Image (cartoon, rainbow, N blue to C red; front, top):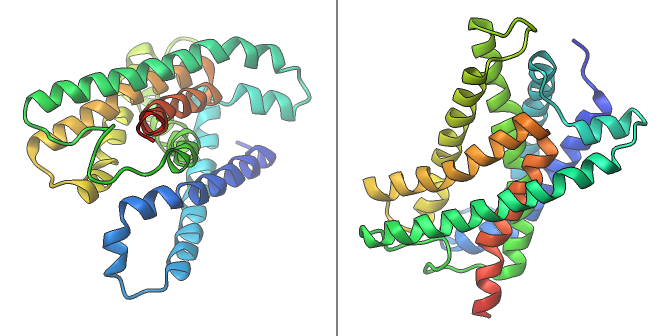
Length: 255
């Protein structure tokens, strides 16, 4: 199975941009922890860029490889690289991608307030550390690009491929059950992956852990469905839109 190396390079460059874009946000949240480290900040950030580049190179390679096997992909970028007209398709997916992304952001905030009634004091809008809106905007690129590459292009695609080995349709495509199981599993892992960030803000308790997984799984399920039905670009747009609701809009009103 051949890899589209032009697409690989584009996604890798996008990933590197996302890694750099999230630095201001993470430095604000984890500033107190970094002060206790006996390491040069620039050396630390350089190391993270190198480590992240290697990790995403592997994830992109594997994701593109397995995506071809299960019929998933990036219809806009792939079509563009092949010289096909993609403008109409891009315009067609924008409303549902942005709309579902905004809905995901609102749902997460609403569920977060419900968890607050159960005793969870931290929520996605207000905490002891509130990065400014511009940092949240830059961090949204990491969510839309990097997390979708890791959680959808790589992980969800890999899970779908594994399930397709067990059972597939007569046309050789993944079954709906296999696709949905992959969507949910990737979404749960997506929520678990946010625990280190939450741990930097507050003490982890069973309820905080459940809250983090549930809130992020809501978005993960929506993004996974879009990836399955519309392509990875749609999931990226939706994830970016959701992060704007979560990390930008609330802090504009607080300024």
